[in-house]
Length: 267
Ligand SMILES: Nc1ncnc2c1ncn2[C@@H]1O[C@H](COP(=O)(O)OP(=O)(O)OP(=O)(O)O)[C@@H](O)[C@H]1O
Ligand SMILES: [Mg+2]
Image (cartoon, rainbow, N blue to C red; front, side, top):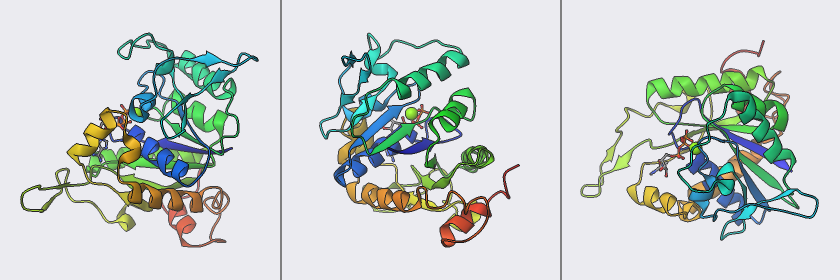
């Protein structure tokens, strides 16, 4: 099973939105796709993919994932909650254990790809995903504000320090298109050039009010299919292939070397 983690330094930038959009694209490609909602206290994946609450175990006591209308398998704490607005109030170690359990105690079946929606930040839970699940690739989601982009780079540093492979960045909510005049409004300030960030920008998405509605009603899979399909191709091309080159240098081309220039070698 190929594991891809979606990370951001900051909350609310659209990590779960992008993670589920990407999962939908991988599923369209014909893959058997699963999503692990590693955001234990802020679980939102079932909501975005329209997976109803409820958790069941197989004969061996392993968790059976919920399934979206498109066949995406989903495992999330919110499937087990008695109501959507019930808070999970747990300390770090318990959260780390829960992530581990959800990963190791689920019957993933023939899932080919596992997209992991990570909690925001670079603390315990993020460490657990990187250490225990050992994703083949990590994608970082950010919005264009300078402060948010800087925080996203801390995630990049963390992944590199742990010997992981950052496949690139998605710049989300980068602009709004005026419905009357068609003008592009960069509400969070100018979208900086990819070269300036040191990370490859794999996709730039606008903020579209209709998308927010689709996401909120469990229809993420219908959002920007062409864009997410292209993102899936870009991510797959970079998964696994530049594990070594991000540490050393250039064997397989430009993308890896531009990643390795971003922060110097990991300590
Ligand atoms: N490009 C977009 N256009 C419109 N709405 C968007 C876009 N990206 C995300 N959203 C909406 O913004 C909200 C925040 O997105 P999301 O929940 O994916 O962020 P997150 O980074 O996962 O947050 P958290 O850190 O709380 O997990 C959601 O309601 C989502 O549907
Ligand atoms: Mg989220």
